[in-house]
Image 1 (cartoon, rainbow, N blue to C red):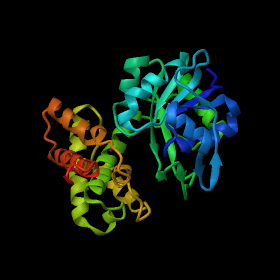
Image 2 (tube, one colour):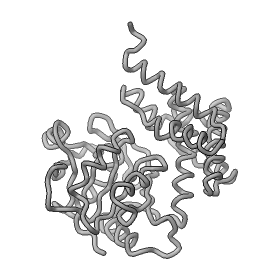
Image 3 (cartoon, rainbow, N blue to C red):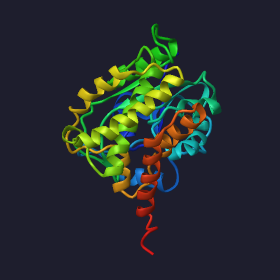
Length: 311
């Protein structure tokens, strides 16, 4: 298996982690999937990363006959269904798909459309702020993508093919022995940290100075741990303790994605986080009161952004 052509859908904060390096390595064999006003904007203005303006080849979803060897999906969760439809003409018989967005079910949704023979597990560990096509003060080596089969004691030909193209493009990555455990660990951290910060309007640094913020964060993480354990994913207190140290290394004033979305007046990914936890809790008979509170509270903040309370 050899990856020569790569297509990316979603040229936002996660997408710009990949795009400049893949273009440098693959030239016109790297392209971005876009249409309509977004295509026009990317062609005219490109994106800015650390003061450099990048323009990438654009392919429209309707274009046929030139599938990619690898499709990277880096869209926001509310746009996943449309993105899955938009990549159709980029998916050939041997195309691999990486869904690098947050959450724990994007791979299942991609596989429901294109089959597990095309889908690998993946997620990002990265801190980047991008607004209006501009990413500033981004450390390209300050994060990484994690990918692989469900288990990776030995690397499959599919994993080795992605590893080779990421090595070629100098994209930082890790291959976890147990991808499902890694996916759920990140989900646990996201639910606890991302949603606490979003609901209260506070940066990551708040967890260094406020035990009240930490009480909410930890309680939410414990709900995720309970659901994960019921699904056979072995998260435990040592994982929470490991994150206690990691969170201290995040720049004090950095803000997680859900808070960034609220401040920008955008629709959040609350369905992917608290919404998913509520539905899984109901399915498994596990109470999720913190996630219920996060869900309702952040929905209210979205309504506030929409002007619901101005009349």
